[in-house]
Image 1 (cartoon, rainbow over the protein chains, first blue to last red):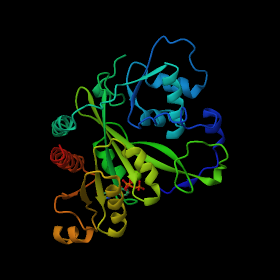
Image 2: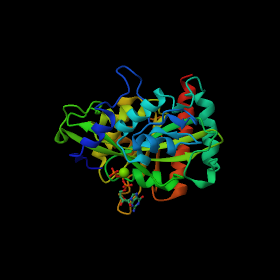
Image 3: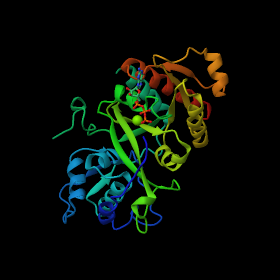
Image 4: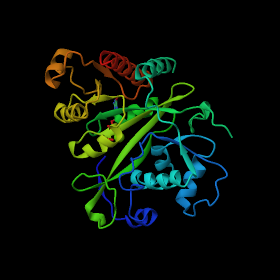
Length: 116
Length: 197
Ligand SMILES: Nc1nc2c(ncn2[C@@H]2O[C@H](COP(=O)(O)OP(=O)(O)OP(=O)(O)O)[C@@H](O)[C@H]2O)c(=O)[nH]1
Ligand SMILES: [Mg+2]
């Protein structure tokens, strides 16, 4: 877990144009936000990393953090790319469980863990 | 192609709810080992960029590489039902990583604090951080072969634990033991959230 110096920031910089958030003031995507590719949207992205993101979550939901690991980019960079794809409609996010009942979810988690 | 629970790689199509739990503790305490013991995927690793001052990098302009560090964030996943997936994040316990903690802990249900009784002072830092974030937690002593045999009372005293905070032991390498630690945590969270209703 020792942090090391990072001298290779040029590539991520190129990928996101220097941003690691989609727009100033835009909500930061949760690391566990679940996103999926929307098929048939015109004008697919040209960046290989963005195409890789779409490929990874075609036909299924995958979390932001898993996508970052899958394409081998730092979390902040992956978030920007995912944010752009959400904005362009190539990705959509699962409806967050804002109103969900934590107690009920914990009960279901408990049963799920016990059944493992 | 539909994703299947059994393929262990993708999340089921029907999963829409992702719950986050943190596994926190000092360097080398066994966070990644515990996550790997229960995760349905090999623990994955992602990097977070931080400035030397500990801020999450959100604009790379004007930041020469030498001003930036990366911190590895390990995580695993357990599908717990048709529509619920649990993410376990192994976060380093050092206070200078507080911004990463805040980011990952947003919306998290709680934390399993792994302590190493061979170095209680570093475990203390992790406890302090979880308290700062306001996350409910369970403390688990990861038992290494050379772990000194303190009594539960001695450990509670040394770690200054509140009476309501569960203290358990676990073996991070053992799937059943790691699973039971998570069950204890979820039970405690259930009680904690019910009290606050
Ligand atoms: N004997 C024994 N060794 C363990 C146990 N848990 C972890 N280890 C070993 O301790 C070392 C550190 O474990 P990790 O799981 O990498 O610890 P960590 O907390 O993720 O460490 P960092 O990410 O570097 O902070 C590894 O060599 C593990 O194999 C355990 O329960 N018993
Ligand atoms: Mg680790």
